[in-house]
Image (cartoon, rainbow, N blue to C red; front, side, top):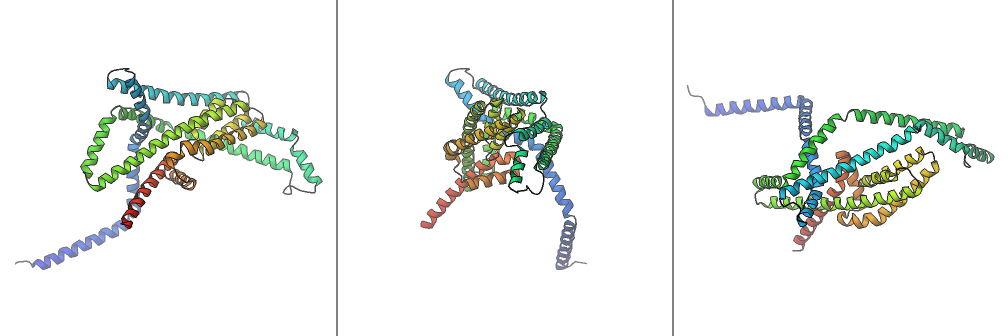
Length: 389
């Protein structure tokens, strides 16, 4: 008995359709679990490549410095072998960077430890501030008496009580913050291990950079060949690379200048450990809009810990002067020419970068936005040329 081919086809179509419907219903019913599985898989994969990603960032940032040292050795006929020059460049650059970080951490430890060892705690500092306000010419009592003589009540309450409430709130906030910082430090073991793995990987990436670049070019050409899209992608990568290089160089020079100016200002004011605070202020200044606040807060805290609240006022004024010099003279000349973003777009780039990638996102948000601006400008120019034709 021969089966009808059309009947078989209909049966297969029906079975296939039923199977697809069943699969669709099952997929819809388990969509939450599937999304959760995909999310976990991506998260696990990202955790695996995290050291490599960090290593690429470290290598990218330190490679220009290694090449500079390598070129210096070559020009001065120091070490004939290219491999030896590369090794010396890597060792010198990494020792220099680690020495800077160790010096900063040691400075912070000595700075904070020295102040706290002199029996100066958060409680003592707030008590001192309260005593200072009570005994100064602009004391709380004198202000209250003046307001009462004018028949003015301050929110219907006692100003001393309100100051005490504010001080108490500050103490609670600081205590909670210190507790949160302690938990963060306890949980950093895994991050430290990841960082050291990334550090070792970055050394190999720089040492054999030509090999990895050649490997990247081979993979890229294998995928795109000499197609138009491949050439466009290469152009985009070159623009991003040039923008990042210019931005990093500008930021480093600006950070150095801000660090020097901050150190001089704080030294003249009489802030202890002005050099350490100045270095931190310079480094933090590389985080636009937010970084400068860190240096100012640190200077104010050190001034308050020294037991002279008026010095904190001078510290704020000094750091504001430094920031005005930076914003109006240094940044437009040093960084502005390399980035050329309007402040509104700069702020948006920082906010979006921070929400997406945290601190790293904030750091790379501005050069990425600048790269997009260049790409858009070129696309617009080409588009207008075609329209005119």
